[in-house]
Image 1 (tube, rainbow, N blue to C red):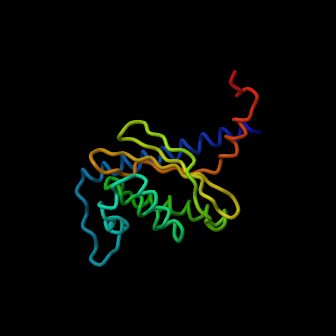
Image 2 (tube, rainbow, N blue to C red):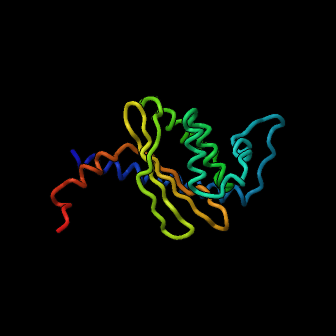
Image 3 (cartoon, one colour):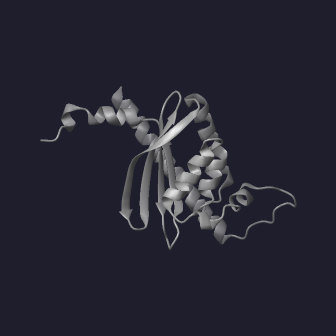
Length: 180
């Protein structure tokens, strides 16, 4: 039974990673091709994302703080804010799908009750990961943010979420994981 849950977790992470990669690749393709003219008066998701001011993105922790301030009231505005930090993420369909998944998850988890840092890992001075326990009334969920700094400012690189922390904790408590 636990093996099945572990395989589902692995599949979930692979799916989320693939979606992030697909968003990145599609964003690369759309920047190379000329963009079609928008209909007059039409509001697009890309236009909403463009309103975010780059000056707000001096630090990865600052981006996360802004995300959680918006997440308190709306997962949609938090996702718009996060994706707005990276001009190369411009896949409205993929972003809309992520918003729908987050909204659905929030309905089943209850009201947002805060967040706590689980771990911060630095791979290099230009790549950093933050993992947070996001508390809801019914159940916690983990949000993982990865940021990249190609020049002087941090930009969002990857966002993952899952509710499998309890399985990892159980696996860590197994006798076979005991160090000598």
